[in-house]
Image 1 (cartoon, rainbow, N blue to C red):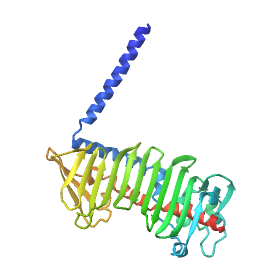
Image 2 (image 1 turned 90 degrees about the vertical axis):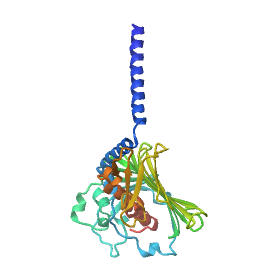
Image 3 (image 1 turned 60 degrees about the vertical axis):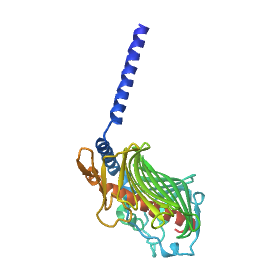
Image 4 (image 1 turned 90 degrees about the horizontal axis):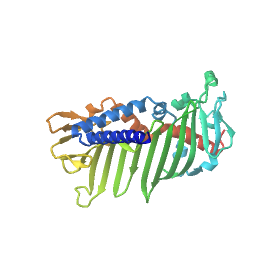
Length: 354
């Protein structure tokens, strides 16, 4: 009986292993056309999930109140750490109107001490930060159904050309974790610029924007799932004494296992499948208008002619996702709601404005 059970178990394991091997073999043998179709399908699915999430709505907020000139003046300096602004702050609407429309903290009450900076407020106010400094009677009916828990923070600002900023946070909506927002920004006259913003959605998808200056300047935007790249656009500017203008430009577009590369100084575009050069594929970069970011989600397109002679464009493959990718790219580039909510409250706490 034991031998029979062992035989059955062995058979099940063997069948599972063979199925896994066959599945991997099928994936490994995909043609370039099949691979890019599959990559586009996964990307479109990811963007459907991301764009329908509650987190997408707040991450893409782009309306608010600009920071005052006093706080962006060349002689302005501040160093705000998490230790100076930590605690639990709950939104509490008040009718008092600030003459200069300045303080935001007057609408919040510190309810508890905490090692983090936790801000609880109505989602409606987050989605429309321009309404944060106003009061209407219906505000009293709003629930604090949005929360951002900041576990790491510092704002070291010396001038537009010299600052160091860090934000690590977890976001919850309706008492459910909606993801993590992480921002790191550094700028120095002597050491250059380094910026990274990332949002990890609750379902496992991650969107990243990065920029770093230097002899090899790198700018990239990507969407991944559990570490696997679904989409990435990367631009490299490499210091090169032999280059025509002293710099070599590289543009790299990745969709799943397919990577398309163009270097400055040549019209030739190369395409790789899992790192292997595809000799017979013909790729053409199509820039409809001037695009300083050289981005597919703006004014760039890529046309591919496959081995069988069929032709397609990236804009066709991911047509349903282009607008959402563009919005996500711009949002991670600026992350407005973090500035209009977290930073303004931190300023008010630091300066004891109320």
